[in-house]
Image (cartoon, rainbow, N blue to C red; front, side):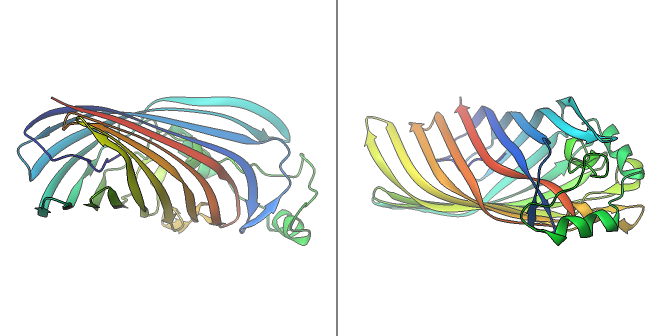
Length: 305
């Protein structure tokens, strides 16, 4: 989680809390929806943020995620419920503002960030990938009737895999990205992109490099006495290729999603920033059999002191 500050940066510590909840209820095979016998995955990621700004240009931040993922999936033809919970992979990020300008009516700030993700989360579920495979005959039966393929529980593989529920990757990964914040009178625009460079982790498994981004225009409906309230329309997305197991591609892992939804941003002076964003996917592309998101809610609160 990296937030675009609505106010000017200032020297000192900042403490934050961020939350992302995603609900997965739809099964798809090669981007075609198929019957769901009752599988479901919910992902709740709470991040604790601690950072320090050395001035208007440089800052450091540590992100510690706490993850809870309950699920119901097919195992040997039966629906079984379970969950994975605990800390995820800790990240250390540094940021730099190479350009900013402020006038009486406008503000523009461009920020670059980068850092390292450490293998602190439990990656044991990745061991399931050693025995995971989707039978080609079953895939053909799914695709024979794209909208409502009928496949019995006994013969249907699960759409929820070990890489979906693992809390960590078991790898040291690089993170790079950038953010833009621009405003003119009461209108503003934000954009953010983050690229994660993966290395091989537990069980010789390597998650594919992934790109996440969001952008959208907004308007400050209230701006007075140190308070501001902004409404925004957000387009967000993420895309990744196929993961690898011992150097071989894993078929059920590539995905591209685009979400659209509203955002509410609230700020008080240069001390407090809060935001809530909702999104519904309007584009979903993935390979093989996967459980895919139906909606996502994000929120964040940052206090500078």
